[in-house]
Length: 484
Ligand code: BGP
Image (cartoon, rainbow, N blue to C red; front, side):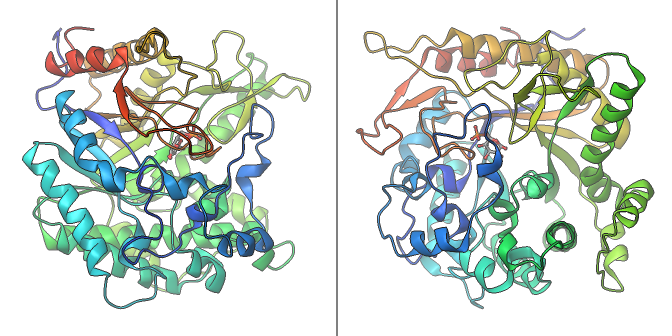
């Protein structure tokens, strides 16, 4: 057995434009759905409804408020101005790769322009240039929770088919403009999460849906994203044969709480649903049981005559996913519940939890890797994994041994999966630097190896500081995992 990870393994970190950049109204950027997301400290271990929707009234209020006081994603962590400093820190850790996203609204402020905003293109070109100089491979997400707000208001987001064209136009500009820098592309971040937070992911405003047809709209929007993803894959492949395109799935590992057949049956259902998204994007077709299920539920997806052919022809080259925790399933309605990544699941009594109640399960990552590789037989990439924690500064230092323990246990399980034959090509931690949480808009839910001096209300110097885990991760990368 090899001591190290495979040669050329892409070690790094992952961030998203709307959670780091700030500069929400600079240089011609338009408003995105993320810019109207409010700080929600109450989205704690119980209330997940706040993820799900937003009202038109709240949007109007946000649009008339030019400040960033209640909208932390407008501030991010000021990556827009500090990207050189941050990239230098990532390079110091030895990053081989950085997963980052391009804000659609920097290039197309309303989504409907025919030509891109030059300043937006320039910003990302500068970022990619700097990454090239530092030998950090970009892994670029084209859609990470920040579509133009205007498309949401005018078309109910992805529900309307025309948004496919708007997105493809945006993606084509990215693929053409940044061809010399970018080889790895991801289309939609956690494409499955459209069911859990339809506004953030697809600009869907339930108020704009016909009463009782909200679910139908979500599936229709999802279908449009699938088609858009395939069209973008086609364009990337045609542009340059070195381009590799991946799908991105939230891997929600679910175990039966007990071996009672009802628990196993419910678990199976959850897992079949969770695989659906990769089935379409890797295998190129809707699974027949999902189609049957939609039919049984009276959901009808409107497809253009060549949609199925497009999906079949332009499948992805690799599968990427996020993995934070696992949960259990039970037929007992009284079973204790626990939060996870925008979901509530049944609590597994064998697992510890993070400060935000997400259950820590390194072994689940190995199981997920084996299951996904066995099922899809394409290279895998873990593009998000990490723990949100409360960090304390003690005499100018942050001793985040809990974070080191979290990563180290997960890396060991990744190694075990590789040793039994899983083709895992990369790992980007979420997140290498503290940023604004997607779910709660808190900065105090800290993920980084690098601390950012900012609080949830935007106070602070925004200076960066290395935590203990910084040097630990640096060594892991330096030794390609042998120091584990
Ligand atoms: C994933 C998202 C990320 C990220 C992460 C952690 O679902 O893709 O954007 O934020 O979850 O979640 P949170 O920020 O809510 O802690």
